[in-house]
Length: 224
Length: 368
Ligand SMILES: Nc1ncnc2c1ncn2[C@@H]1O[C@H](COP(=O)(O)OP(=O)(O)OP(=O)(O)O)[C@@H](O)[C@H]1O
Ligand SMILES: [Mg+2]
Image (cartoon, rainbow over all chains, first blue to last red; front, top):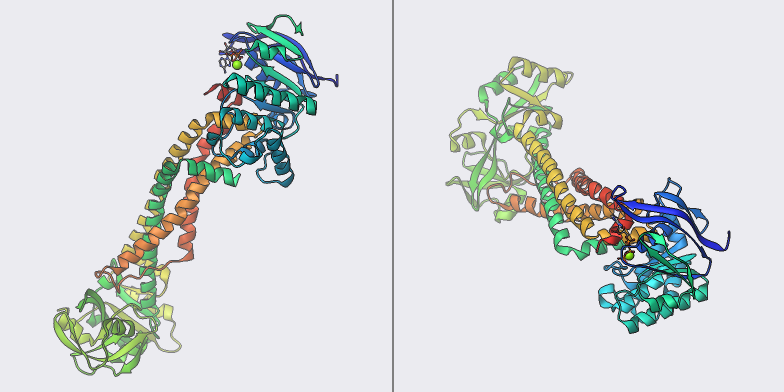
């Protein structure tokens, strides 16, 4: 059990009072330190699945354990879980425009000026190659640089898993490659589990495993 | 968090400033009106606590002390009462002086100086009807010394001395012989106030009660601030006005802040979704939005206080009221303004903060 970061059984998630079945009984297991790509056509439920794993939303039914936490329990806000256990990277507009790169990285630490958090944030910014741009605001950064800041932010609390929803979807292929390499590098360095939603088969090929969704269901586990 | 709050407000400078301006105007009005009302009250207290008098008598239902009118006959009647040691009358009115058409001028006999708390600093008391004493500040402002001539209501007077009061109408400008002022103003046998000192062993309360009894409905006795608060309606009107404006400021300012903050929360839906996604609790989002609206209120408290202070000063520099009203800036007044401004910020921010805290991160992140 301890080496499984995500355990899902028959996850169902519907929207608009059941009229949209985004997930129609998904079961899967993801192991600690694994890099899993989630593929599938638009509207197949990829983001929905990622949001459930990241406790941004709750399933209608089924079982879901992530990083040792039961995400189907009905009480309480999962904000603390999200801060400690997961790091999110979205496709666009990940950052708060009024805050500098460094301050954006610090948001999940819930402190904008604590010493040790500061040290960690600076170290991560250096690791993603933005040490000299720590005090720039998002509008003064390129698309690739913004995603690097988002990568640094996702790691600042040393989470168990990173959830990335088409993190390079808005970048040109060269920048995309660089950001992905960075993400992969950090993932293997730190032994974090990485779950990445992508449309790009080449990106998917670099993953340890691909999970394909169609109409809210996992098709067949394909191993590379 | 504080830094983030200020940055968020700074991002929408114009909108934040408009919200601040709305509350500031209300706060400025509260400060200006309040300072003027306090100033009026202070003047009245000064009159009432004048010199060695135990109490004063004025006209019942007069809207303001300078509008009180008491017949001199009452003075002679009361002066004969066994419990009264001394009773003197004074006529308080406005006269035109060089450069000030509404100078506070008091007609009083030299015998009444002690009861009225008048102290001669220079020169002598008047002995003829064309002689006048100037208040020391008025004398130095006008640059007039004993021996100089001065025109009051187009009539020539000679300045024979300079005085200071313990507190009888502190900001009054000049003392004239009672008869001279009555003539000048064509108000023969008319007084504004009677100052009374009672004999030893006589209770002041009983003497006051006798006046109220015998002249019920026409005269009132005054000794304390609470009494004229009850009796002088203009003051209570200013006070009521000030409270009404406070209330309006609260409502209008509150709506302004609410509008500003709802717009701002709406525009930042995705940002708030991100904050929630990376681990901010609802309470933290709530705090951030309330912090923003409270900051707007705090800024408005500062700006409004400055504007109100300036406005009250500007009013007192008008020639028509110079010497009549000097604003008093009591700490209570500032406390009231700060509490109202913060209250407006808090009330205006509650609903937007609640909305922000309710934002679902999942839905906010679908929103581009
Ligand atoms: N909050 C919501 N309200 C209503 N419908 C929703 C909501 N979230 C998702 N859906 C619907 O659920 C289905 C799955 O959506 P999801 O976003 O998971 O798809 P996806 O695989 O991520 O698609 P894409 O590749 O376009 O991002 C879609 O039909 C979508 O419209
Ligand atoms: Mg999606």
